[in-house]
Figure (cartoon, rainbow, N blue to C red):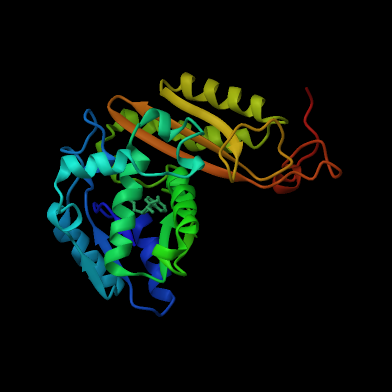
Length: 281
Ligand code: AMP
């Protein structure tokens, strides 16, 4: 299971799931320079190795792998960045204009490092969080597209773990001030309220309004096809609402799944889920 460390209960939920499989679990900790842009928070990214190792030992992992840059990038960082730029990425990593637009090169850096971690550790299963949904979808496609390299490796999707008030757990949450921590709840609330919309466009507008009202700087707040992450005009197939927004210098992302709507049952796409009827207007 690849991680960048600064482990929290969200990471622990993935590790627990892997350990419960009964197979030996390897967790990597590596703050990967090739997935950070030049003006991003690579230097500031939290590093809590001692606490991470203690947590992983208590969770019962078989091994923790903490490679040095040279172990993953023996050709040097500049050459590795060039390799990342030239990777043939799946469409889901290049066309939705989500993370691929806001963090150019990020998903390529992830694909490069995760591919090399897989080459070195040869896992049969790899656990990824839905919290980073475009990353998860990209890795699913990368693995499916290169069976000669990855064999029968399966990507296991793990649900997003949240704080009791709804904020998705993240290593970056520790950088939120008390005021920003309160504002951060706008993400999960906007995603929840988007469930009530009749069309994706209405859901997007509702999310944007809520985020703006709470003072967040929106990078995207969209409803997309859950597989391709491209635009959709209906809720008839599974969709995903996704948000990226900034509070000061802290960038937060979150998303939720909307199951496919059954248009024959109700005008409200998610009435059955919430126990209420057709919306007006
Ligand atoms: P990171 O250390 O941020 O690279 O994350 C390592 C793995 O943990 C990725 O697959 C993330 O999607 C996953 N992850 C991070 N936060 C959460 C969370 N709150 N719930 C579930 N998975 C998470």
